[in-house]
Structures are given as C-alpha cells and as structure tokens.
Length: 90
Image (cartoon, rainbow, N blue to C red; front, side):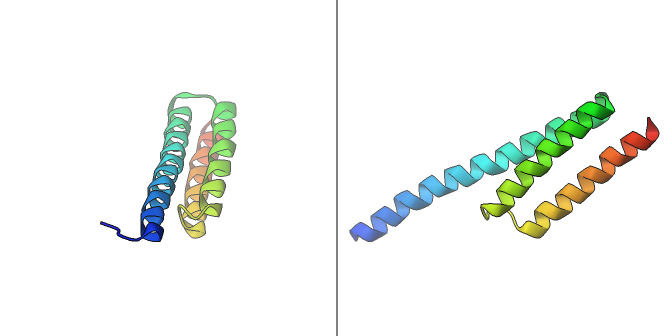
C-alpha cells in the first residue's frame, strides 16, 4: 500500500487511466464486432460506413497510446481487405 501522498495520488491516477483505457479498447472491439456483422450480413454500403468508423476509432485509440500505432495500422489493413473482398463478391 502507498504511504506518501504522492504515491496515493499516483494510485488514484492509475485507476482512472486504466478504466479509461479499458473503455477505449472495449469501444474498439465493439466497433470491430459491428463491422464483422455488417460484412457478413449487411450491405456493402453499411460495411463501408462501419469500416470508416472503425478506422477512426483505431486511429484515436493508437493516438492515445492504448494500442501501438502499428497494431492499429495492421488492424485497419486487415479490416479493409475484408470489406474489399465483400465489394468484389457483390
């Protein structure tokens, strides 16, 4: 347990930041799940709109340092490839 005031404050800050980062990751995963649903069962236009939203969330999450920028880039690349495959199949 922390003893000094600064250590206690650091614990409070870490708790807030951890909960905020978990919320950001959860938001990203929810957007990805929505995109996968649109790819499987939605129209091409819906999938395209969901892709743009998911890419925006991934960039924002990487900018905040929750995930690495290369991880966000890899994610965006893979998702856009799936949407592109759906467009070609349609």
